[in-house]
Amino acid sequence: MSGPELPAAEELKSCCAAAYGQDAVALLLGEAYHPGGQALTNRLAGALELRSGQHVVDIASGPGTTARLLASGHGAEVTGVELNPSSVDAAQRAAAQDGLAERVRFLVGDAERLPLPDDAADAVLCECAFCTFPDKATAAAEFARVLEPGGRVGITDVTARPGGLPDELSGLTAWVACIADARPMADYRAILEEAGLRVRHAQDHDEALRNMISTIEARLKFLRMTDPARLTRAGVDVEAVLHHTRLAAEATADGALGYALITAEKPLHAADLDAS
Ligand SMILES: C[S@@+](CC[C@H](N)C(=O)[O-])C[C@H]1O[C@@H](n2cnc3c(N)ncnc32)[C@H](O)[C@@H]1O
Figure (tube, rainbow, N blue to C red):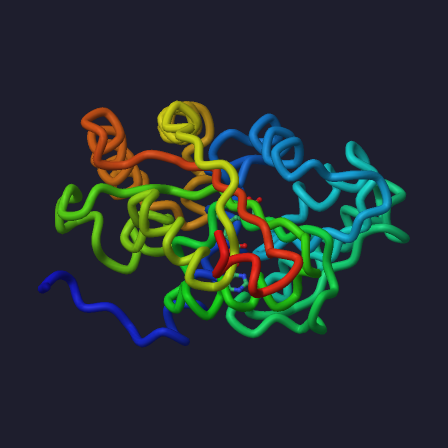
């Protein structure tokens, strides 16, 4: 398969982490770093049947919004793991400001090499980030490793129809924007199953992606009108972003892009999976 040339895996991950620490991204995304925002996180927590006092690991925790919500709204003890050290610092400060420092901690770490022991978590979450991991099988194996037997994993992520995206949505910018390496729902399910996890829920939430794209577009147009200097200071190339959001909006409209919520369980005994 040919397409735009991409950097090697470690560089892809660094580019991704660096991008999400930038002012431009905060300006365009606001509080919601994943489609569906807090409402979809609450739905994911419900599907995972989270209970008060459980230890939840939030992989690629970004600004820490989800970790704070899981602690304040669901009574969880949360460890966020995130590759960008400045995002980790900012997330830790925000948790302390909300009085959650005792229940929420953040570690600098790579989803493909989690800095956590085996069987450490009741649940693992990963929102809008699995699609950016170059080695998804290794990341899924890491989720399974840190989960205790009977524990659950929940991901929400961008889905893509194979061959459905234009070349312009296949390069580095689109990779970082969670599009270029997005997979069909069936692929995500297969990757989790191959890591020894048993899929429990698989739901489409395409509307959440459509809404996020139109919110970004509206925010950008509003800032271009009211405060163009702020966009310049943050280094936003307005026309380029608008062009990409238009392409992404077209791809969601024709079903080439969507958004999924998937949960899976680590069997109590490895043999349980073979028997099912
Ligand atoms: C779209 S943001 C989602 C953030 C967060 N999950 C949320 O929904 O609010 C993707 C995040 O993944 C992080 N990331 C990318 N690759 C990573 C990796 N290999 N390990 C850990 N974090 C990673 C980025 O730094 C960024 O914060």
